[in-house]
Image (cartoon, rainbow, N blue to C red):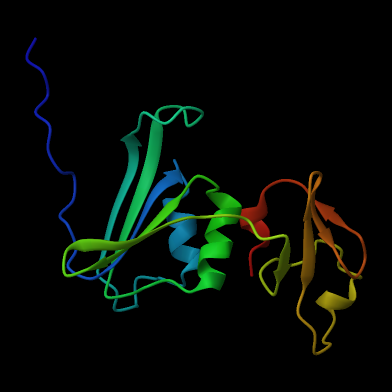
Length: 156
């Protein structure tokens, strides 16, 4: 049996951001986090279920390339919630000029919606949601509700 030829799945980008090592199956959630819809102007490349040798991933990852856009710290923090092994590569003139590993910050403001409908952060008050990252999950600083799974569903 002949071995499959190796090569690039998607072309390099001149300028922009490559989000690599996304948890497989989460690439479309990353697009939602970035506010990228079918009606936005970004040029995208998306690869899902790509082989990886990193342990603990099931041997698969997703990759998103966004041309002419560099991510903000807040966007990177949101991606960290669903893809804690992701790396952010900033590309300029086809070269990687910065490589950032994502890290979930200790405190999240305005990123997650509290699941407690009675929480003051869900009322029409002029405040942002606020969570502390704990070993048990994300704890709301207003009502102590803990979110410990499915973070993507609660991202604002």
